[in-house]
Length: 64
Image (cartoon, rainbow, N blue to C red; front, side):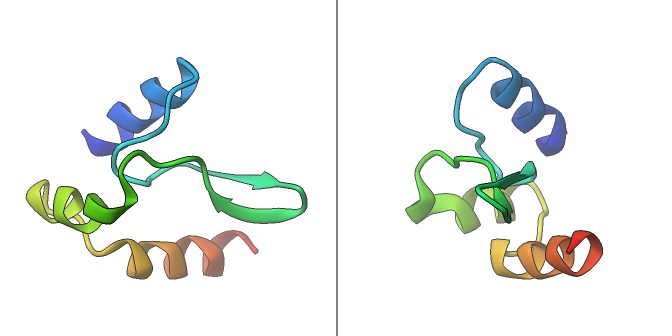
């Protein structure tokens, strides 16, 4: 569900909530803009997702 929320928000031109959507921007593979970064891991934990640092490592390992 978190991925769907983020995907819809990104498609609407808004920042994502859970940090699930990535892109290549200026030659760097990175998450699309994320709302309220200070509370990101709290939001992720509330919906059963791993911390962003773990997810980021996985995404970069898969796609870089």
